[in-house]
Amino acid sequence: MAAPILKWKRVTDTTGPQPRPRHGHRAVAIKDLMVVFGGGNEGIVDELHVYNTATNQWFVPPVKGDVPPGCAAYGFVVDGTRILVFGGMVEYGKYSNELYELQASRWEWKRVKPRPPRNGPPPCPRLGHSFTSIGNKVYLFGGLANDSEDPKKQYSQILE
Image 1 (cartoon, rainbow, N blue to C red):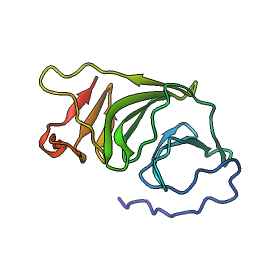
Image 2 (tube, helix red, strand yellow):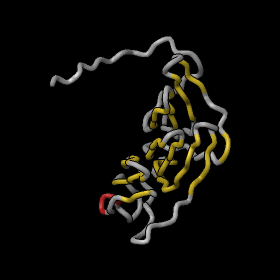
Image 3 (cartoon, one colour):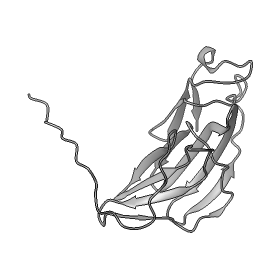
Image 4 (cartoon, one colour):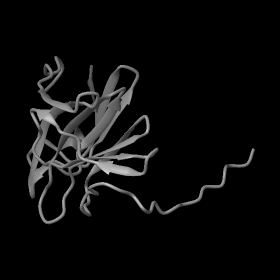
């Protein structure tokens, strides 16, 4: 069976407030929406932009709640209309191990404080880690830390 041929296509003629150029941001899909958060360009940003792929339009939703600080190279995973943000770089050289949830149906943020695992410490502050959802669990693996707890030497962790 032959693999499908893939082709890049430039997105043009978008409307609405486009995000500034950046790196270290993340994006997830919810139905026809691409939700983009954070990243850095002359500083770390906490901006949330949404691109509607059906209408070719960008918009900035009116968010409420416990908006996380700007972050880059963080974990970003979607479960239905719920998006989880974990860790990342919050200032140059300073990493986080905080967990936030964005309920995209209401554009409402809240800080989440999961219970620590019974078999070890909670995840240390880190950036550049893998953070993925499988079934009703979220898996965290690896990354780079700036303290004595090296995430490369830690086991993967599960958020249930």
